[in-house]
Length: 114
Length: 116
Image 1 (tube, helix red, strand yellow):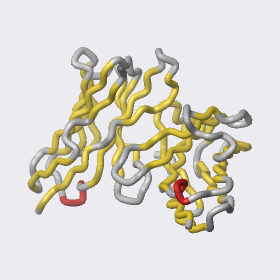
Image 2 (tube, chains in turn red, blue):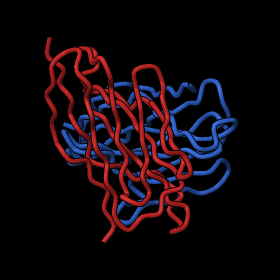
Image 3 (cartoon, chains in turn yellow, blue):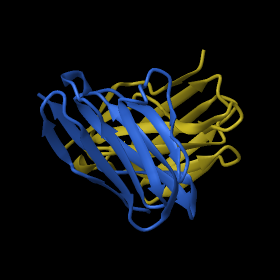
Image 4 (cartoon, chains in turn yellow, red):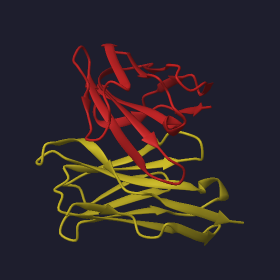
């Protein structure tokens, strides 16, 4: 069956450390994968998109990797701050299966403690 | 990035009434818009996809007569919850994709619907 899983429903880290969030998928062939941030009671905010032929993408303190062999994407926040506390969602688009829509993982709730 | 707005942000209505939620792309042309529903601490559930000028495509299990979607222009889509019941209470979020953002998908801030 097809699955997209973000392990760790919740992740607690100390301020200043690097947060690493994982997104694994099964039985999809994503053309690209996106990461979003969602705060309580708000819509998701787009952060980064990485294509299947890209290994890594960076934006300020954020870094995303994409390994199509492992079927995994990692999302890193370096020098984390309490303001980074939120739920982070990964989503993929698999064009081959006719899924011309984003399919979301359940999200990882990150808490950065001072 | 692009901006998507939603109105209203919060609505409370009586059971049996209809509620309309608007979604606008403010600085780009949204050729495709999406409507999602989200329950507390759960991920987003896609309800329907609409292309400008066409009928919406609904996901399995979503009643099209209950959730009416109109995408009449490249900047506006509406979701009307007809004859709302308490079980329709949820967080509704719209999303848009289009020119010049062909791959990225941008979300509105969401609408909290409470049906009494």
